[in-house]
Length: 464
Image (cartoon, rainbow, N blue to C red; front, side, top):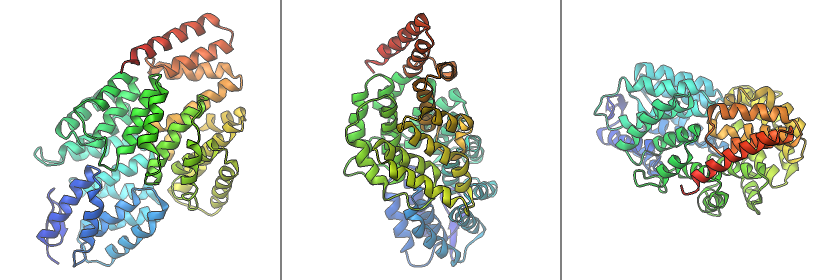
């Protein structure tokens, strides 16, 4: 078949026009622009089978983490299998096949191997980076884009987007100063780099720089608020900022307008943000009206097939928050039965983290706080094994801390709050929890001092 080079210099099967269309699709993908969906469909219907068209379409359906999209991904992979391809394209075939077989770690390793030979393959890089995110592999989140950065030309049109990926990996691996510098450079090059923006936002979050985070997201230097496939998640971050700043009403307004409402797409990757935000309100004892009911109804049609344990947890949170405890128990029991014969990455994630986390959410709403502690204490250091980011997984760390307070385990609560303050003492939540723990221990003076620190930080953020 006819072939040429894509914009990054990698050999590709297809005509000049087809390769140009593929390059445009990759440009849309790396910007999380919804046009990538139409362009990938156009590529598939272009006439002669093009391996990278099938690969792109399969990856789009896999990165949604929605079991409903697996049939479309498998169909595209089968077409890819049946199409003459070069070595790089066959390497993509192997990675997609592993992912479809449930071997998420295997797919990640396949893409690492592919990138050793074709380090400028931006599709392999981006999907490998997404897999590292789904698997909670902070080291490879950092290292995969950093390796490719050394090989990509300075004038490559997407080099700043690779910097955005590197920034997120650096943040998740704890290199906050380097992450911030790299992320700001990426966004300066492309103000619509929503992944790079997200990396900067995560960095401010981990450093407790709430006012700067709000200013960054609401200022004029970025474009992220609409028109991309990552909009909801960045709105979620802004809502978290306002919650930490002591402005819960603004957080709920964002929830209603941007995170989950009647026109929401109903996809797990967005609904988990909704669950994670409402769960924080639940932990705080705040009234969220019927929002949990609406969200639980959306999750109810997404839980039949075991595919990603991280999604399962957020479905259980929604069910539990809505009082649909039988639905939560049913999902947990289904996954327990499935593990009897299951294998692959999600089986390991479900067994080690997913099920204990799901059981802890159910136990919390049933006020079985000691059971929450028993479920979460053994896994709190390895929660990253089932994916997500530090900010996302913090919902479970907060569940553990709140349960320690509510069960009267004040020594444990002080222990957990002290850990949090050791890395971030400039927020509100951590000082508030320390005050509650100290008050439970009878240390009135210490509790009052902690309350003053929380109030001072809240005042600092009040005008953000």
